[in-house]
Amino acid sequence: MKETHPLIFADQWTLLRLIHRHGLKNPAATLRLAGFFFVSLLLAPIRLADQWLFGKKLRETRLDPAPVMVLGHWRSGTTLLQTLLSKDPQFGYLSGYQAFMPGIELIHLKPIYELIRRAIPRKRRMDNMPRGLTVPEEEEFALTATSLTGSYHSLWFPKDESYFEKFVLFENCSPREREQWKSEYVRLLKRIALATGRTKLMLKNPPNTARIGILLEVLPESKFVHIQRNPYDVFLSMRNMYEKSIRPLFLEPMSDEEIEEKIFLWYEKLNRAYLRQRTLIADENFYNVRYEDLEKSPIVVLKSIYQKFGYDFESARPHVESYLESVRNYEKNQFSLSPEIIEKINHRWSFAFEAFGYTPLDPHQPNRSF
Image 1 (cartoon, rainbow, N blue to C red):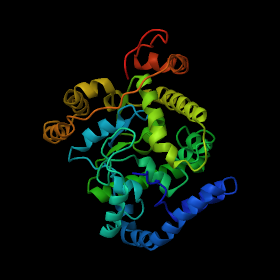
Image 2 (image 1 turned 30 degrees about the vertical axis):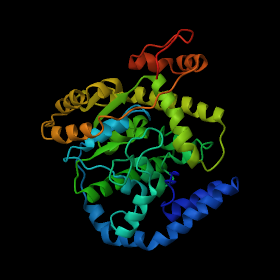
Image 3 (image 1 turned 30 degrees about the horizontal axis):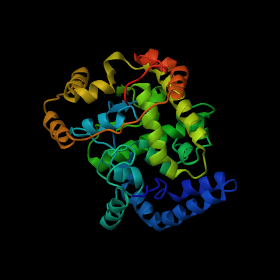
């Protein structure tokens, strides 16, 4: 099934700003954005009703000061870890419905819900993992649909790196824009708490991997779980994700060579920013996971996370085990790497092999399957 663009239910003001910023340079993108804008006008009365009905409740909502935040580069296992943690009933999390219908999701209109449920594929094209309105999603989708502070505008407009640089790395970002991002993020977290009825949140958002400093300004008692994966596997999975899931969402053309460079560059920038900032987290609030360990022994890894943060794992265990049984026959995609790409990864990402404890391959020797 064709990918549904995450901007299709964006609010009208965000879409107008995108049209103003990108329209003259890209008429084709303007036509698509205009279509999204028409949908946003149809939904505008619901957004106004949402503000009227829930504005006071949102202002009064108080968040648990210690949410669990899953960090890690895209395709490092963040979704698997998020999915397992989401089985614990104590946590509230952003659902697919909230992620793609931000601003109107609190008014739960069944016809709209059913329309979206049918439009969204049941599995992600890149890895066949479950997808839908009830599964946990990334906060960045909602941020990007409701403001220009969401970094995924640098995916929809892949040649414009300014969204990523400003609102992930916070480079060339004014104090006003920094405060705006914090305000937008807190508002989103309050909406999650109100929608789920839980103030203790479990959050997964790969861009947050480079935002540790600003996240600690907002919620200084946060618990962080970082997950890392072999850089070769990350590269292959990223290339597959771009081809199957992201390229169809581009609002401007981009060549294979440009996509490859974007993969390399974002990995370098995101992980270098993480490595600079991870010492800001108090030891008792941080746990590091290797994807390979989580895949092999999920119960052991989860129990270790819970013990580190002083949570009771036994109450969550039955829910986690039930989910693991349901996906027991899941098979991962298989890919291959050319010697040239191995050599490039070894050179560009050498810092990650050292920091994360993986051994570079010899590009001139037969290597394992990926």
